[in-house]
Image (cartoon, rainbow, N blue to C red):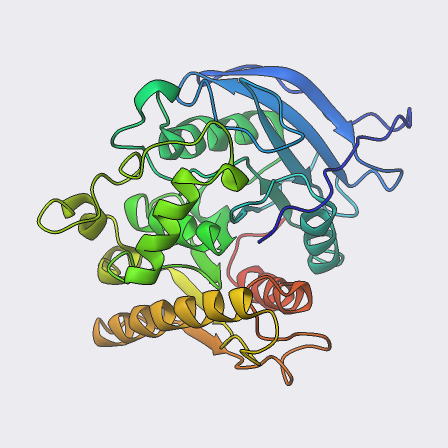
Length: 339
């Protein structure tokens, strides 16, 4: 998903957003500031000892991670709320107007906190060969640091029954990757056009591309930085970390997949081909879930014409993604513990 405009926090004085305490290896370097006068969404920043120097996209600050949080419309700190962790794609940022609008629209009537963490080119993994950029332990940062920090500072339901995860593109990979590694943390997992199969050569090319292209962050990193060499017989990490082939740990969890087919291949062919590739990975994942006897929701909306107005079936079509998020929030709110 291409990066959109970064949100500039609002200078509005009241009401005050929550104040956050350090902890779990995270230092709060910038306290929450509302992004606008609706006072539902705020942005804060942390420094992490697990990813002390993330690579940067324009608008980001060296050595820190911006995190965006959307609160329920009637948030009451005396109540406790379930939390949805929403992982962005690449190149994208957590704190964009598009991500804010998707979360706020989908949760307008839902008592749900939504957290958008920084992911840059992370592929939501602990990197194998980070090289000169230093430790890039994104999985440890998000699961062992950020989740407990959110639970310690906001009025959450701090259990598996009160927590779900979802992501778009690279973030869809991350959502399944995290849920499979730590099923005790999440009761529902979803992916919007997720690149779920690391055995797929198109996805391997995407991972290598996000490593070496400046458009995905600077400085660039080596092609083998994240999962090691993608070439057989040195590709053992790629195979071991591929969500599509390791669905067994999702048993008992709610699972949802959303994908288009790219629509008209002559219109925006890059986005069309990208979606066709991820559609293939979703078909593989769904087949493996079915073979394992794991119930799941699989929405393949093709060219998008019957899914949502303006949806084109392409990889970063915002109307498609908004419809995905609306549907997913409805699903998880039937399962998550509620206030």
